[in-house]
Amino acid sequence: MTTGVPPARPAPAVPAAARVPAGVTLPPTGGAPGPRLPVGPSVGPSIGPSAAPYGTAPESASRPDPLDAVADWGPVTTAAGVFRLVPVRLERDLRLITAWMNDPAVAAFWHLAGPAGATAAHLRAQIRGDGRSVPCLGVLRGVPMSYWEVYRADLDPLARYHPVRPHDTGLHLLIGGAADRGRGVGTVLLRAVSDLVLDRRPMCGRVIAEPDIRNVPSVAAFLRAGFRLAAETDLPGKRAAVVVRDRALRHAP
Image 1: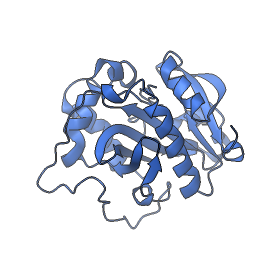
Image 2: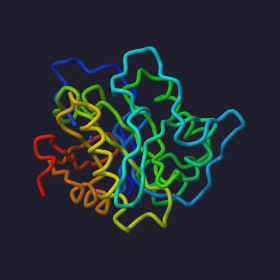
Image 3: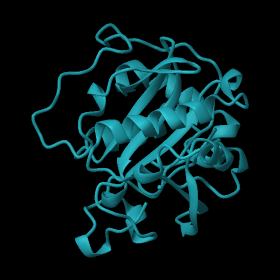
Image 4: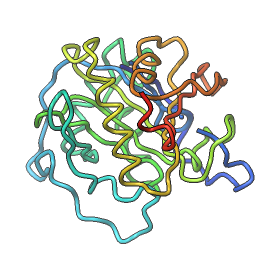
């Protein structure tokens, strides 16, 4: 599952009048991060001497948090095992994420193949930003196996191309290991993470993604996870399928 690279992010907040937009290979839209959802080779994490183990949350910052403390969302039990989102730390995670970005299946949609510096710049833009986009490792049964970007769609360049609503929350995703692709794991995790968003963000009425329309497995994974196809939209560098999971329809079959 590879979503693809989104428009450049972070970007200045979109004026209120323009905020009515939304977001397996799942890449991000615009700016630094983008929708991306491929799985790369199985590579063990590179943990530096100062890096905390996976599952250990960093100290919370004393600034407004547009995404309601992703680091504190906690683990969830899924059909694939216990899963949690762990915010990225460059000193611990850069080598692993760079390896995934150089997997041809991922690079086709994320466009971050190359030296570690390219991946580092993409991650650093979010980590040093205002919190509207949070890059995370997806840790399944204690093993990092996917990369996620959880972002405020109403504060994202996506809002310039597609109507979004206040507090709409977007997802970009890639599955890192080939062994986890094509087996339905992406669908299971998409449903679990979108449930987490709706549980932890009470102001959020919709979870949104914008996979490349050419990425048929990614689009299908979203639809199986309870998302609906809302529109096709031209975004920088791609024609996107805008898929939405509505809070009001959360428990629909």
